[in-house]
Image (cartoon, rainbow, N blue to C red; front, top):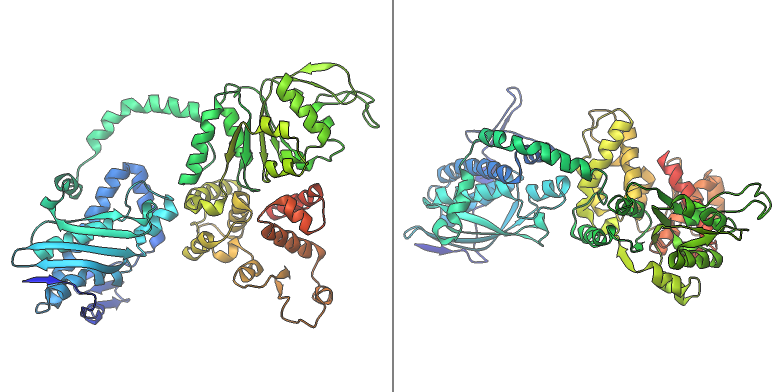
Length: 567
């Protein structure tokens, strides 16, 4: 008889399954029917999966989890037949998805299911929601290049095969773990799949010891190759947007072309610049990084291009500038938009002629320097506003590369968090158990206005506040007032744990509130800076204008705030 699931088909409820659960705390056992169960944290399974992938490789780990799910599916199919011996075929079959949901593995929604026990024909299309394996992959790996729900797939194959008494294979045709919008699975008899035989090999365990011996001869050459690549990487990330930017800039690394790195504050522009230098033919020469916004404008020429004795009051001796010190190597000009008109003219001469004159001097100095510039503002807009030379802009922007903000590459969070955890575990001589699930959920929903620099500060704070062998809580990562501010539509000014909601007392002068509640000036300034950055979409110059400050003055206050947060 053939059964097709209609949208209004009423399935047996889950009560007969939930009644099978028994907790025997005195014996330390949990039972589901006659099966002894384990209650484990998803984070523990995530760590186990990561170690397995690192130990035996992705393909073998995939086979292991497919077989793990397969064994579970076989036992649940047996239980379903016992609990629903006289039920419709659909009700008996649907016990499998219901058990999956009951165990917290995944929520299953049917799209189309056709079952004919007489001819033993089968076809199923289902959608998975909130897969535990997708959650693990996003947390531990960021994103895979193939579907990630391995144990769930093994379970579906085993349960369906046992139910139909023939080999049924389910395949994941789309998966959120590899960047798709949803998780969809399709199941049909093995012979109807072109690669059915090949896929079935995953369900056969294979020893790996013989392969280990054959790989030993390759270890030394691989180690040598890796040593050559030490330090020559573009930060940390596997997201499509970040890999695209790295692939683009890699094409320019070996040449002499000037590179313009664009991106918001804190995205890691200097890391990218250093990587370009390390991958260039100048890797054994000097790399000099200059933050143009941090140098007073009346001193910026002397700092960059040098100064001769007596050029101005206080210049008691001549000294070379950053360009001369970087001769033969690379100079990184961060916030290049802050250069004065005179400094822009001198920089243009360096780019065109490879020569400069120190401030107050007449002698020409030859320099051979590769220039990597960076800014979080639009140089093109600055040219239109008359703040930046058009000819210099065209020279610098020969090879522009945009580095995406952290909020556009959240799949890289697991790698970045792991990197910073390892760093601060070593710095503070402790080892935590990583982030709690609640903390991970918040990190993935947070806007990250400070990008990777903010993430680094957040993780450091969490490691400092968490004892060894304990999980880092959400409250350890973010101060309570910040969490409260994130969960409300109103802005807050806080100090020493106190929170002010400006709308609470509309008749009360906010200045009186500041004084009455002993809120410090530093706290007020911090909130103003953060609000201005949000209003200006992290554009430093725009935020400065909102507060009536010059850009260097705002940048100075922002730097002080960032230094304070790292202490």
